Amino acid sequence: MKKRSGKLLRIVTWCMGIAVVLCALYIMANGLGLVDSLDFGAGAYYYADIPAFERFVNDQAYRSPVPTWVCIILFLAWGWLMYRLWAWLETRNQHHDHPAHGKE
Image 1 (cartoon, rainbow, N blue to C red):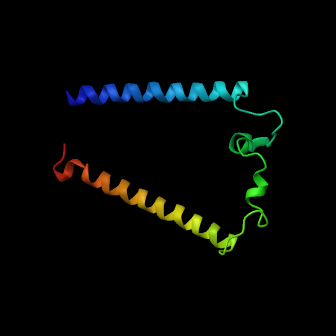
Image 2: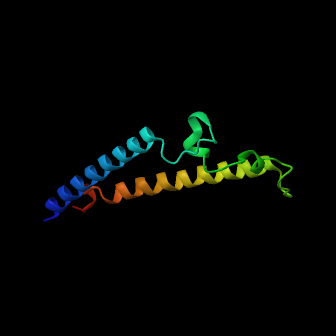
Image 3: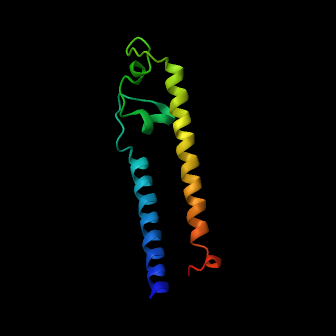
């Protein structure tokens, strides 16, 4: 039964993956989600939903007691820490699922 459910899960995963790729290609081919007045070039899909993006990174628009560069360093440090946590959890999960440790 376990082998059968694993095969079914694999088939469902492949079908979902193919469907996602086909939907993404359709969206890109038809330019869905883009606003004609906002042309960001290659980054259009990333920044099209943020009109006047430059005002959010302008030091005059937002005042903080913490310098902008400190916020950027904290953001990058947080991302690195979360990446390391994820990598650690993945290796721990692989270690516990290994057949040599009594799990089958």
